[in-house]
Length: 188
Image (cartoon, rainbow, N blue to C red; front, side):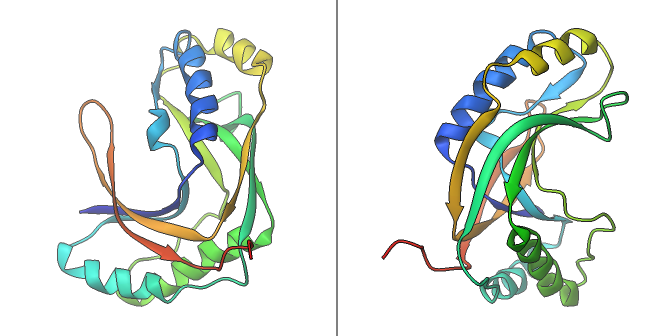
C-alpha cells in the first residue's frame, strides 16, 4: 500500500483552487492536473509499504503532538523548481515554523520503522499540476499571473490524517485511513 500523511484543506479553499485549475488546464495541456478534492498539505510521503507495517505506523502517528493549533493561509501561485523549467505548479502555504516542526516530528516518529526522512527541506505547498511537456506554458503563465484571486483561504489545523493513495489511469484515489489530533482546538 502507498501512504502519505497530510492536513486536509478547507472546502472553500478547494472550491477556489478548483476554479483556478479549470481555468489553467484549458491552456496548460502539457500538464497533468490535480482534482480539487485531492488537494492536501503533505506532511510526510511514506511511499509503498507492506500492509503489516500499518498498525505500527498508526501507533507512532498517534504519539505525535504539537504545542498548539496551527494557523495556515493559502495564497499565491508558483512553480517548482522555477518558472523557466517548471515541473510543478503549486499554491503557496504560509504558516509559522510550527508547521515545519510538525512535519519534522512526524518524520522522526516514523524513522525507527525504516521510513527515511526526506533529503530536501520541508516546503509546504499544494500541488495543482505536474508538467509532462511545455505545451501551452507561455499562455498559462499569463493566466496564472492575471488570475483574479491570489488568496485561497485560511484554516486552523489541529489534526492530521494518514491516507492511502491508489494510482489509477484517471488519477490518484486517496482514502483516509486514520485521523490524529496533534493539538486541542483554540476555541473554548
